[in-house]
Image 1 (cartoon, rainbow, N blue to C red):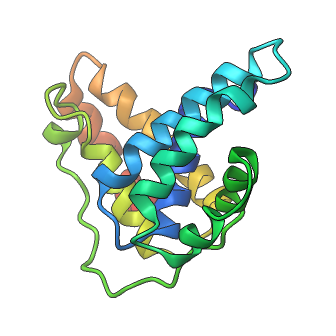
Image 2: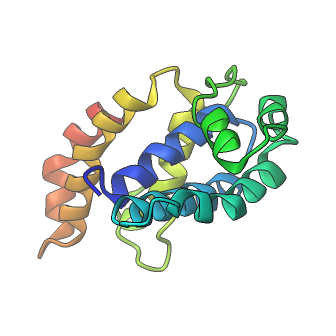
Length: 174
C-alpha cells in the first residue's frame, strides 16, 4: 500500500479521536489498528471483493463501540451495507471538542519503554481530540517527530539524543 500501514493507523487514530473526543484510547485504538490492517490487506490484494469481505466485522465493532459516544455514528450505522457504513463514518466531521486538560508531553524514558508501547498512542490521541487541526495536517506535523523519537530510542545514547532534540520536539509537539 502506498500510504503504508503505520501512516494509515496514525491517520485513523487521529480521525477517530476527533470524531469521538469523549471516548478513551482503548475505544479507538483497536479500531484504528483494524482499519489500517484491512486497508493494507485490501490495497495489496488482487481480490475485487476484499473490502466487502473485510468490512462487516469492522463496521459491527465501530457501531458497537462508538454509537453511544457520538450520535452521528448511530446514524451511519443505519446505512444498508458495511461499505456505506464505512464511507459514512470515514467522512463524518470532527465532533465539537469538549473541555479537556492540557496535553502533557510524555517523558523520554516512557517513550522508549518497550513494556509501555501505548505512551505515544495516548499522547497522539490526547492531542488529536483537543485540537481543531485537521488530520491531514496533524499527521504531517507528527510523522517527522515520531520518526525522530524512534531514532532516539534506537540510538546508542538515547539520553543524549533526547537532550539534543528535546527543544525541537517540544516546539513541534506543543
